[in-house]
Image (tube, rainbow, N blue to C red; front, side, top):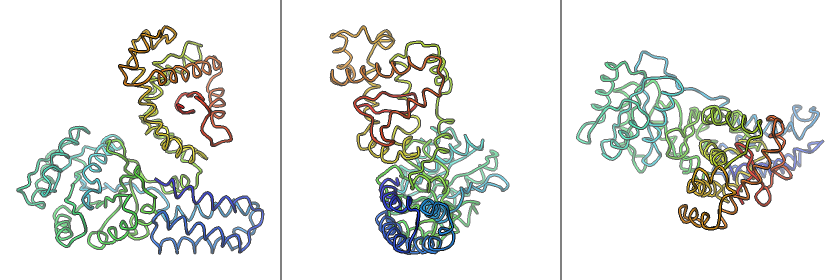
Length: 468
């Protein structure tokens, strides 16, 4: 999401971060570049002005001049001002009231409200062990009601039925009454959107708000609409007592400006980030971690949390035990590695959370490494169990059968076999050496600390080189 912004800011800050002495001129030059980078990322002009002024005041003060490393101190100032701009710390949903706590979702049509309702239901159910019910008050799009019913079934939460013939306020009141009877902890109310802000939409949602008195009113906004996000956020904030924001579609070609502008304009915290259509693709918004990611310092905490939630621990432990005993690393093990990485959002998602890997993550995305992994997985799936366990038995006729079955070419299969051979060789060297040796090998996968590994550089467990 922040690729372009991160790239531009890092180039601007690199010039000053190594300086032993900071002058008025080099601060001005750097801040000019920072200003350009923020404006190109669609950050609202008043936000950019205030941010740059805050950094300038602190940079020319004693805070930098008395520092042992002024360049690094300047970088720290930029980081702390980014955090302040986005809201200091993650703010959880406030559900501290007599159940059911009502959460009202507001936003424009196409912002991803209905999907976000399902994602939030799953988040509350799995992370906070809440009993959740969802209801759609979008009577203008019967398909939205059906969509929410399908998603509710997928995330296994209660669904309150509604129809296009009913009035939104009546639907919400009936759902609230039913939620009380069923001892529901949280009721999520999906509302109608419009293609643009209009008076009828605002009046209707104000009436809904009054009828159910939600403890949380979340504004769902598409991160890709850039500058328009500011105007939309302001209109909704004027009409409703918003308590927080959910930024959706952050995996799209977004420049990141919405995340830096919305908090400043509404004064309300960004509580969640949503990516993609999958119901598990919702993460709490941590300003400090996002600032760190923007400045190329990585976000290891989020990566660890993701790994704890999504990695199949039994499979991971089994592989480590296998490696330490010196057993053969086969193609089924390699397929498991691909699947683990996909579960964590793919290679580029993992890399962007590692310090100094922002450029590599961009290159991985451009090379569509995820697509290559899926192709390699399809090849492995087209093999028999015996072929996966021992690829040496692959004759010409077997190879032809596998490529026809997976819709690939012989050279794709040969590339995979070469990749596997290098990986197996690396694993063999690790016999009894534990994870320390493995981590050293991973470090060597990225020449110069940032480039793509050369020709088929192998794939260490849960990370490392790319398929070439």
